[in-house]
Length: 105
Image (tube, rainbow, N blue to C red; front, side):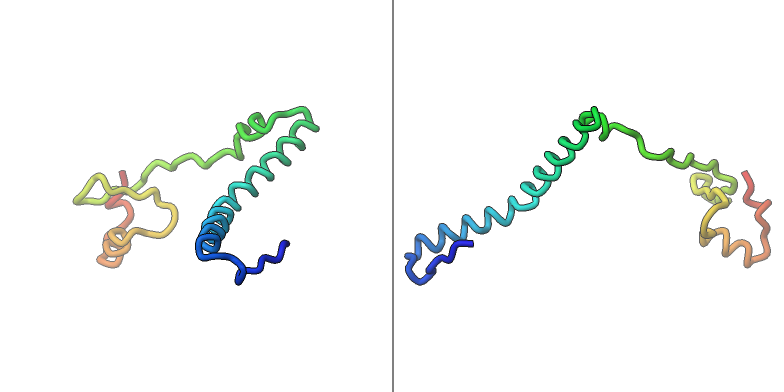
């Protein structure tokens, strides 16, 4: 890195240097991404692919949505699949003595 004698610079030169440094810092991540993209493209070409082809590959299958099994008695738009944590409205009703069958769809 070049040593700069900051004391020898005028105020205008210092402000210009400050702007240049801020701009370089802001563009640092973009430059790093461009370097990584170029390296990835080179590796993809070595294997006979383009980076776009590799990017279009689909990841592992996503989980299918589960159909709801239980419906809120007062608001039919609120449902629960029976998986995961019990919603408060189910937990409260179970404590009050109701059963899951009371909410079954």
